[in-house]
Length: 303
Image (cartoon, rainbow, N blue to C red; front, side):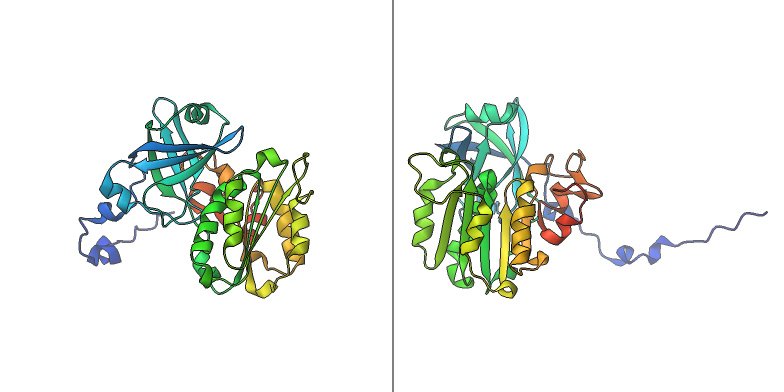
């Protein structure tokens, strides 16, 4: 059989060939390899395992240009030890520094916990998707966190409380195993003072000083009255928590595409190159870490 003749193809017909050359394109692309030289300007001990770090980009112009959206993360480099992905915990409107809540869990984070003010670090990013807060404007919002999940939830909390008039009812629900593991407890009263913000905190195991509710975080949802078609939910915490919290939200009538979760615990290199974040053909670092719950339950082994 004679081989079929090759079809001639003129690349000059491609639409890109008819566009003028953009010699400045590289400058407008996100410089994922760019390391912002930074320093630690403050350290706050939150628990035995977590500290809050204030990280300031040293160059004034770079610090002014740096911006992020709630839900995104950065790669934090400790020279000589490596780098780790950390969700940003501060307000997007704060240009002076970013806040990173870091749990002591490995070589890099252990080195960070030994660092003091003035220590030099590097940050890359920001990376990843964000919580679609613009879409939630004019609606009620549930901000739900378990354990360390309050760290990535803190950025959307700041956005919502700083733009309180853009949202209807606001509920902040937070739970941990015991009172000693509560994060940012110094801010609960501050959030409560904001007009019409309802905050509830629960622990699974109480001590002698705890006067609040005891049980699983889903217990707090029994005290929340919502319009399911006018409510969005953001849920952060261990993935096992999603099934129970989002399951109860579904029973309350909230559609799954109105619930957003963060798979920030699966983040690794930030660029989808190491393939350690992938779930099937989805890369948490680039396609996430923020997903609506409908997408998550259709990702095998995501939770």
